Image 1 (cartoon, rainbow, N blue to C red):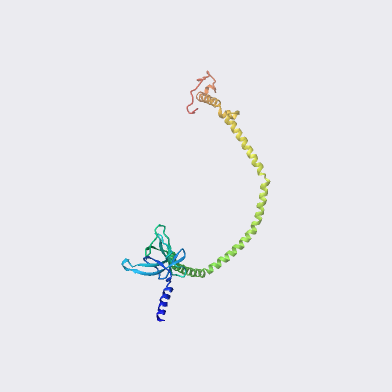
Image 2 (image 1 turned 90 degrees about the horizontal axis):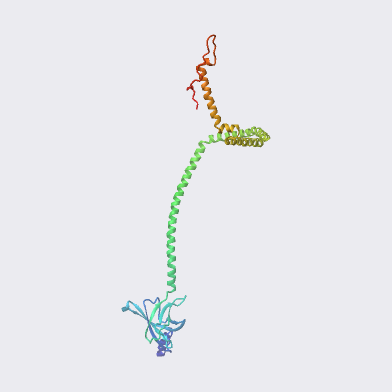
Length: 311
């Protein structure tokens, strides 16, 4: 009975570990630098199907403490060359599994050959990878919040100072109002008097405004439009006369434009000058009173009087 119990214990222990005692398996090896919690009896999966178990894990201290994992895979599973053993998470409940990835080489691996090992980023690694930027942003946000809080502290100081200034200003205004209360009352009374005066002035202005309306009606009665039209007509006629004079038409135009009259007048002035000069020098020629003797007529013509300039 004791021997039977020991045998049953042995077989039960290996059965609980996941060892298949009644089927033959092939053993393969994989070397990892870190197994992330992989233990013996963890499953080996091929396309999601359980085809084996992790049999044993050994620490290789002579190879930089790498880990040698022994895999027992069913005899009917043939592994082509280039096959890899991917260490991955077993799901949301935790644990590790090894997923087989078949190679593409034509040769078939023999028993106790070593598979190429690789690792898949687990949920914890993904969470850490995603959480790291969040933590970084949170840290930056906290720093910015600290800066904002410091700014609010400075702003609070400024606001306190402003409020103190407002308090001082309010006290000053209250003192000023107290000191000038009499003046303000006097100003209020003066404003009331001024309002009364304005009302009286408005009453006096109303007759003036009515007279202004009468004056406006009188101005309208003068027919200023007709007067302005007559003035414009007169100005137009004056422009025509001036244009005619400028063109040399008529007597006025000839006086302005023709030089013949000017020359004749100039000659007449010269002759008149000579006549007056001769009359002044020889008056006897023109006026003679004599009782006896012959009249001396003098020279017929006197030289031009230089006192008068004739152009």
